[in-house]
Length: 171
Image: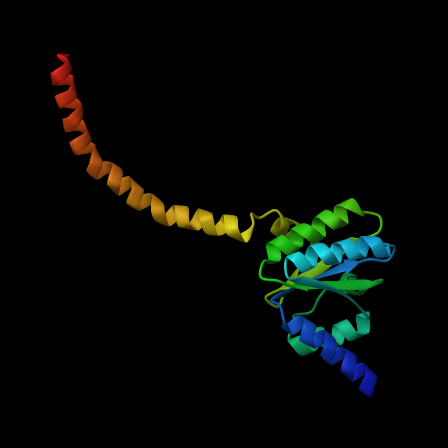
């Protein structure tokens, strides 16, 4: 392998190693302004978008230990989106951008925890609540039994107070 090609493969491999996930997108007719806006939105979530050659990407994915991906992921111009702690949030940004620029950009597939993702799985991932909402829901589940216990323990004294108030009112 030529030194330049090895350098590019190593560079893409380093980008892929930063994240547990990577999404592939076709960006053939996206304007510079639109891709800049996408990169800005991704940067706010801690993610990055890079354009890579398909042959370099294949070699970097093999070196990273990813399972065999569909050939559809390597057709046309390819942009990779990865990074950030919230794969769902990044998928939301990418799916919204893809929907807004339907004719120009499309999602090809992806990898999550070294397992291939289909387009439908990425769209399902984008429909999940954000990481903060999921954390809040889990905390609410942990808190619910304690709240119910307090209500049960409070019921007896509350019932006694209700009886005494009824007695005072003369009911």
